[in-house]
Length: 127
Image (cartoon, rainbow, N blue to C red):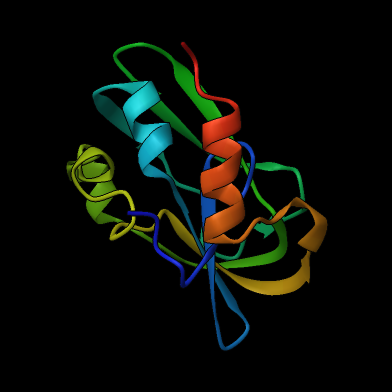
């Protein structure tokens, strides 16, 4: 089930907005495609992130994948649990965030509702 309390990108990331803070993570589809996640490169606190800029890299046994931000702003918190247990993103991708950003700007055109994301997944399903 895709949570309806957040928005999604076509690159399989999610963003949840809470009082001017964008909470960023990866979707279940992303973690499944990556396979076993072995490392997450967390951004620095106070780093300035631009829309479309890679703010983290998620490494799995298959590949290293940069993750681009759908928002711009300043990093205010990172999920330090991922330093010791990056596999948490496999176990609970919607319950584990990667970073929280004080939002300056949002690329609304790049964001899908849960229903739109579900439709996007269905239309792009690999046979």
